[in-house]
Length: 316
Ligand code: G3H
Ligand code: 13P
Ligand code: ZN
Image (cartoon, rainbow, N blue to C red; front, top):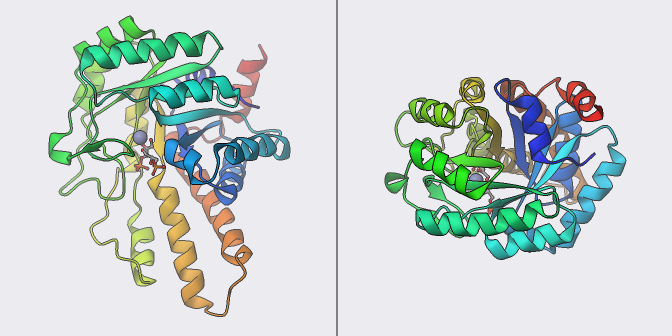
């Protein structure tokens, strides 16, 4: 069942965070649904501009509709990740998304507000909800490059003004994470002090944490042992998700970790079974490994076991 992120956030706020996982293909989609049902968790499917352009956006939309039929117990939102204004409108018009992210965080404050407000007006007119971003993460996004050193944390005062003036439904905040597999050169530093300040000025308002892959060291070790070159890869401590959710984070974005599972499975299969050329062999292993990964992640997020409670809330 496709719902808005807003509905999921109402159930989760202050208690746990919903996992927002990126998909690009069939195998990820199947693994994602299996893993969330395995762990009885509501979830968010994210589609980036890059994912839409990988083949044709219609394939992903069709995959999600099929998955909704194949896995009728699943409760999830379909969300555009890091959209620009034009892509937001395209998704709003498509009828396939329940939520869009407008990312104008690289623009100045007033321009970010103006763009976000336009998208909010268009989305709300169709019953679709909007996430926006204020502050800048380190690392690399599709259309924005920000050096870790230049990463700008979200200013709590600006956050309040931004939400009031745009009417946005959730806000991605920069509190020290970054995208990709190389998040911290030294020890990790999530700025819970900044998060607490934001929650103080925006009580009950859903916040979003991007760049939240944990980059499990065991996964990195296995990839490197099978011919990969990911020395120094490092991520966010998943043990900190709980504290983040108590401080108002209701959506936690994870993409890189799923790519690591894919890389590990394929490297090991081809290293250990050099005779294999049936694409379904690594595909089958990946789908189950990804499902297991999702189920484990939902344990850290606290969304594990929440599915029936959410269904009950939705039925009222
Ligand atoms: O934040 C970016 C997401 O990880 C999506 O990555 O733009 O390469 O699909 P992508
Ligand atoms: P990671 O690169 O940490 O998985 O972050 C993904 C993300 O923020 C997608 O929007
Ligand atoms: Zn992101």
